[in-house]
Image (cartoon, rainbow, N blue to C red):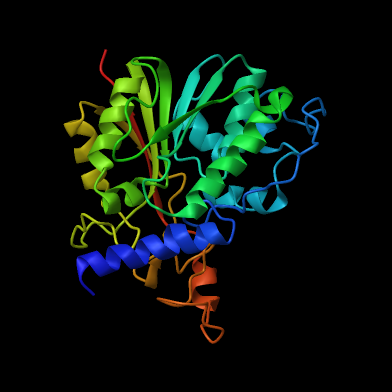
Length: 303
């Protein structure tokens, strides 16, 4: 398969087909259209400090399917590693249906902070599913100011301007979407836009599917995996300083080589290259692996 075809196929199954099924990108959860009546005033579970990151992760407004993935994504530990704390402004690039926003927004709302959600550039891909994802996100996260506060909505894509006012953000997050930007040829723009939005001393946090160090680098990330060294180079080219790495989201069972790339694994569980799922495909080997091996990185904009 040539690079262009591989890019189209990956794009189709990662965004279009997933989006048409109500998903926000690669394996993200279904977008909820119904009003959520969960109460933010509900007491914290025993042993959890109310208003803490753990409180937000345990929130009963989150769907059970989302919470079931916490063991793979470690949201409280990851957010703390990226220096998410009370009273700050967090910019989340391409939150999709809002798996992480469902944690970050209530936490910041309770603690005097603010979320800027940077969604897909309207109409850039020609994929109507992306427009539906953005509408669902807007309806959900702007419809409950008691729970989510009032997140600011912005956009990122090939032709967008500033994602947030210059030097206004304390933390910017790229959460499993760098491979999409590599395929679209806008990865370097994402880093430049993040750098411009951050205050001096601000943090860029990245979670991304991690390729094996010995694999041949793929600038289009057609299998969804990205070389950690390449991510660091992109960040440094934009002016960032590498600060730290964590293995909190590592998965040593993942050998990074699967018939349909990273989307063979849960939660996407792709089973065919084109067309509908293959009912004869044996998922057991890949389900046993679990979710992908991921790098968790922290970069800093120099003072």
